[in-house]
Length: 255
Image 1 (cartoon, rainbow, N blue to C red):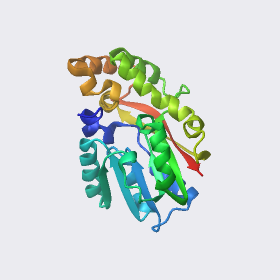
Image 2 (spheres, rainbow, N blue to C red):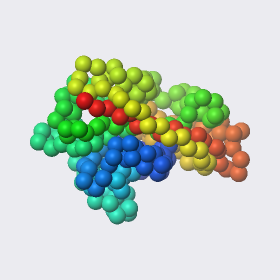
Image 3 (cartoon, rainbow, N blue to C red):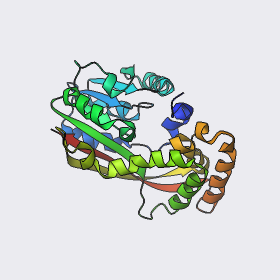
Image 4 (cartoon, rainbow, N blue to C red):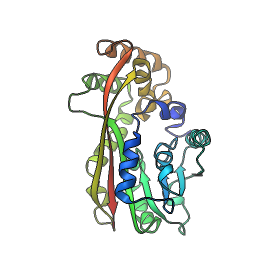
């Protein structure tokens, strides 16, 4: 079973969402049309692939986790979008396919750098772009509950898994280092900020969508961690909800 198998049923609904304005802004920036093709690597439940679906003519999602692909398949069917799904990784894709846009969300740090960069050379069509995307709670103090929330997660997460997951933040923070020496380099950054309210129970159970605090990682400690998270959030909630400010980003990477 893969590291995200036990999170698939929760991931789509509980992770910080990408707003519709994000997809529209990126599509306008890249000039996407129904003639454009897009492949989403590490697609998970298809959040990025399906978000861009109205702006392109063909979408493909790739993921090594069958449970995630099942979730993406259900969501695509519900939304009425044609989404081709492939079980695998970037290095296992056919060398003969290419796309105008290659999207990578919360998956870049799980990819092996050298084979990934080598495969991207042919996977990205001439004139095409890579999008490194993320959506997360802002850390500038406008989410006053966040530090304590993460402290609870850290206390309950196995140390090795917490460190592995931390690579994601470091990788996104220094994308030039990931692409250094390759045919690609980061260019423009698209940023969209939104605010919403999220239910305390949903925010509590969001912890289970992260690899370091997934049901599989925590085992018998799931309910104890959830109890601690609820207790922490209680002082920040009103009527059972918590305010959250989210920033969604797309780093455009080109040859």
